[in-house]
Length: 120
Image (tube, rainbow, N blue to C red; front, top):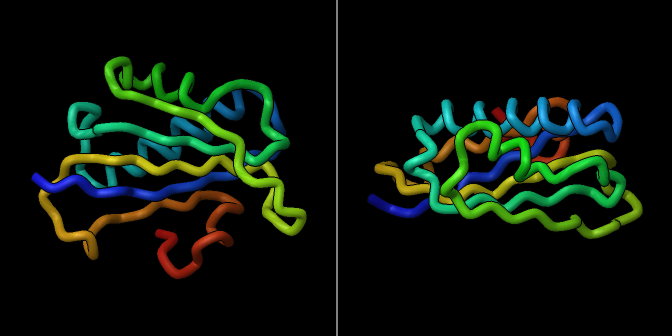
């Protein structure tokens, strides 16, 4: 097994707890499916949110998905004036049997604009 970092991001239509949870769970589920992972494969997950998201922690949404034993952390993204608003970013570390070039990164909704080069 090799440890790989898997990136992802999604955007919200507004800062509401239920919406944040739904979009975060959608993103994490797609990242897991795209890379053939289960929660047991995940070492840790680091979430960031743009400063305009304050309704809840995206880690709380991941806990609802079965990530009870996985170390999760949240932070605020830099407040760059030209940045896309209402974005949740993820860096997931997982044990996988694939070369780095085969890792599938996931960008959803307006967040596809962040990484058009690797967005699925």
